[in-house]
Length: 547
Image (tube, rainbow, N blue to C red; front, side, top):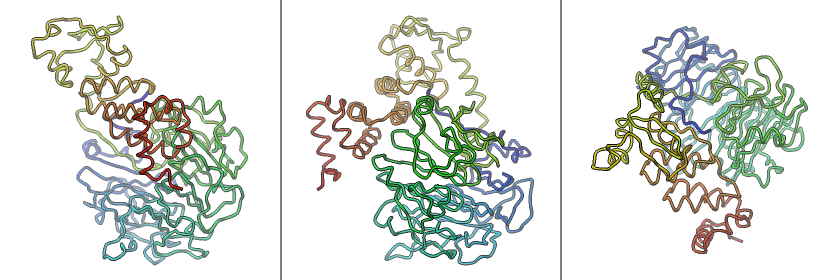
């Protein structure tokens, strides 16, 4: 089932926040929990004020001193900077990325991981001076950051990777074994390629290019680079065995790596002493391996993955939004993916990871109206309060005219004009299936879509017919999760039919990366001549047919 959550999780599973006042919690926009014991946290409120709390090891709170605090203290240099995300190392050192593309660093700096040209501990956030844009005074704009134990990576909007910090294993890729004090571009085999994803293990680095290639460099003692051997690499080395698979995301644990393809398939490699590869044993692997068929079938299409360079745990989101975990979980070694009761990664890590830290910041959407939404949700399909029954395929759905009028222009028109249905207590609908129409009505009450992914196209048809723009967007996101080589041509034509430009663009780009297989697919053969010709012309313009 697909569920779009209004709030991916809350703070109750993170003990560090237990003393916070409820009124303060309602003002929180984003948090991240970090540190060797999960005893530090950063908080960004809705007014863009940044706070820190916790143990303050190595000045990692950024409050200007080394004092610990049970309650939030302002991090003055970051207030009003519009923080986009955080990343952290094991010292810990911390990076903050702003929406404007600036990077700030503070905390432990024994290996130059702050990128300020010194090895002095940083008690307050200071800007990391990135190289300037050629021909101008402005620094290059950063869109993502990542941290290993004591090194840092930054990704520019042009797809360049910069690195600094500890370099004892080549993880900074400077060609030397000395630490790198300021940001230096990682070039070599990445030169001329646009990187779209970066990740760090303890002493290793990974990058994914826009065409789905994966490169690794740094320490490789247990095969975490996935290059078929156990030799450290001082320059990015392409994982040749993934040729033919379009990787869209990589994540790194302490010494293992997970990679997700654009078809939702999972590949794993590296250290496996705690079963963190999920392959049923504890043997290290130096080349990418897919999940066993029975496990892959159970998990279904993977939509997201997570790992922590602090630990040996792996997490993936499978079909229906179910979260699976394996590896070092609560002190146990779990060697096969195991379903959890959670529907989001943050809660799973809070429960099972050691230490309990976040893989990325958690964005909260809490407000005092949540109880109202809960009441509306409980009123859906409640015969005791309903004043209207909608029958679909002979099955009743109990609803309320007022809510339908408020939430949907179609019903507003129906009940405000002289339609026959306006005076009826039972209305019959047979244009769509019962499961889809019920999901639509429930969406009007809750703002969430509760429906099997395979029904997304029918719901998209309904959203298009009822002019429900927001629902249409949800449906498109659902459909995107199910795109494969076998169905992408059909979905491309459907997107054009429904004027769903986002889905059309997504399917087109997906098809370009699998061009030969797509052209040979049955769904492509069923395209009408005009559609097929138009697709091939656009593909040629994109350079697919270049010799």
